[in-house]
Image (cartoon, rainbow, N blue to C red; front, top):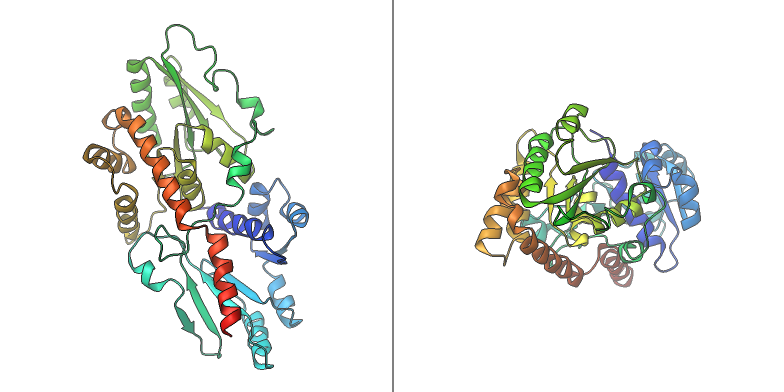
Amino acid sequence: MDNYGDAGVCWRLARSLSKRDDIRIRLFCDDLKVLDKIAHGDAVKTGAALGIEVLPWTSLDVVGASNLVADVVIEAFACKIPETYIDAMRLKSSKGSSGPLWINLEYLTAESWADEMHLMPSPQNNDLNKYFYFPGFTEKTGGLTLGDWDEVTAQTVPPSLAPFWDERSDGGHLGDSYLGVRRISIFNYSHAPLEKCLRGLADMAKSNGELIDIYVCANQNISAQLIQSLEDLPLRFIQLPFIPQEDYDWLLSRCDLNFVRGEDSFVRAQWAGKPFIWDIYPQSDRAHEIKLDAFLDLYFEGASSSLIKQGKSAMKWAEPHEWWGLMEEWTAHSEKWSDKLRALGQLEVKILDFVKSQEISR
């Protein structure tokens, strides 16, 4: 598997924090090539323009040896900070100052235990404290990163997408034989049963007199044979190059249905307020199934019994004919869910509030 999700979450948080208060940010990454792809081709250059110093992971040892440790250290996804840097953190704490605030940014989960674990201290055997920070979907958790979503999605077609976004995609000249156009984006793991789903969508489009434009992101596992077999049906496959995070957000906001995966694109699909199908990262012990069910219970809370049933089935790759007819209702429900998440507060704001509260109490 790749690490676009982990890198993407960290890059978004760094960008969001860089726009708030007077904060100097260093972002350490163990694979800058991955970060480059989502940061306009050059993470170091793009970061510098935003006030973010992007450094290779190996630089942590150098920074630690120089005792130039940060006031706030965010350890994302159990990345395990090198001992050299941790020793420097401990040294700074022992010199009479309060020492660095150490935050462990955890993976996103809707499971109820995250409510109780959020912001819990974890005393280390080196006299430092580490705090668990859980993003989430309830008031008791740390929220989700919104970032510049409103700004970028309000813009016109981004340059990277302009060659692929024509009148048909904007609902222009469809012809008398079609009732409308749907737009779908796809960004899944390689194991996803996409081909079966796409055949079902092709059948639905034909029977409903619709056109479907399918935006295929980052070379997804859709075979040329499948595309050729569906060429006489009202589907158009549009292969996209790897695009920056902001442009991907714009795409999600304009599509009627988004296939997403992991954590980063999963969160952005929720801000879009549109129906989505989440390809959750699979785990060998099947723990991902528990995580998926926990999220679906929260996400579909308050929906009609039919949407709950068919929506949950859609998330588990049911045939499109089972849920396609509920798209309008699902869209309205997704918009309400997005509004609910906004009301809970954004992660970048809540994490700064926690930092400030610790500064006052120490």
